[in-house]
Image (tube, rainbow, N blue to C red; front, side):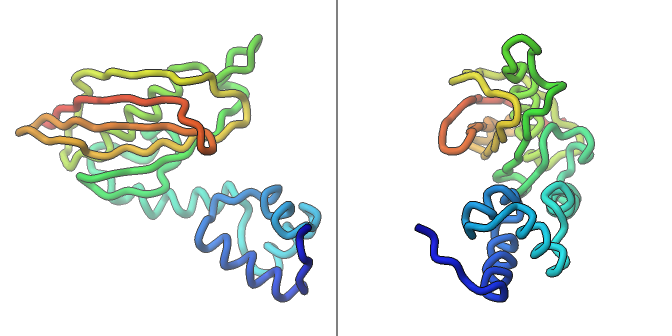
Length: 184
């Protein structure tokens, strides 16, 4: 059973939670605080905290400025964290236009594109091309699921980079890939 707190305490905790994890949805917050989604929206409005899409956009704009090999619009998914030459994390919500109509399963090219663009973004060069990729799809991803992809530099040899990418829905791994990218 969730212990209800005062409005002031709830708003303080809400602000702290959204500061540390700006990608928490209103539904998740409502369940956590045992209040309605409308109450969460009112709290956010009073605190001047924008909705999830706007919070995601703000974080992404700050991070995209660090990427050298491509512009923000070329990346598939929203960049959450980025450390040039080392690692990056992105999130992508499966939208209706991304799924096969009959099964409501996300098309594999979206998962590949999210991972591939993340791998290319890590490399600190103006021109970066994918040389090869070894990928595995672990399970289907469905409409409205959120895919979090994490990429890191595993090895560098002259102008060739081995980037490993793992994508998860929640704690479940849905995609893994090893990308060899070449910097020019």
